[in-house]
Length: 196
Image 1 (cartoon, helix red, strand yellow):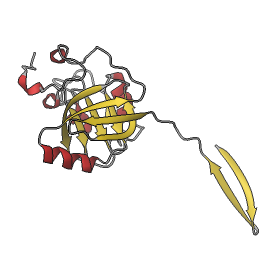
Image 2 (image 1 turned 180 degrees about the vertical axis):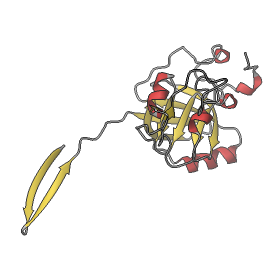
Image 3 (image 1 turned 90 degrees about the horizontal axis):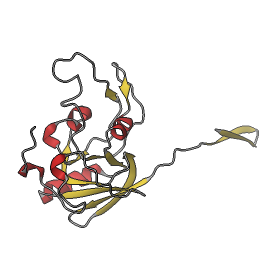
Image 4 (image 1 turned 30 degrees about the horizontal axis):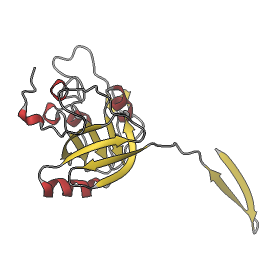
């Protein structure tokens, strides 16, 4: 941090020049023709899926690992997501560890109004964005999610694509049932047997 000092009429005025973290841009393309821009979070991969939303203030790690959201893009309507981080899975848990509904993230991507970079979970853990990068999940922050939720509710069936700046389409997909589709096709996961 660079601090510059000036004197104005006998008072010391301190001006701070902060080094802000540079964020990559990302674009959300919706099936109704709307395009929204924000900043890229998570992995640099292009994803598409059905747009769904969650209005909870807490439980983002549970929602993202919930198999019912498999292959969908999840919009969180609460203003800040990631404020306590992601709990680390503990060995020896009978089914799933606290804070997880399954062993991995099931959503294709997430959209948030704002994301917190750190982790302050009492069980230790990692930040939400680091977790997303580790599991190849992309997302967008800085979008008015309340507006987006209203759009999803009014349209009934809305599809979207997250396109991080500079990302190229990779022909690798997290989910086996999506491998037979082109990158520009919207796929309804409810038409497939998704259980192993």
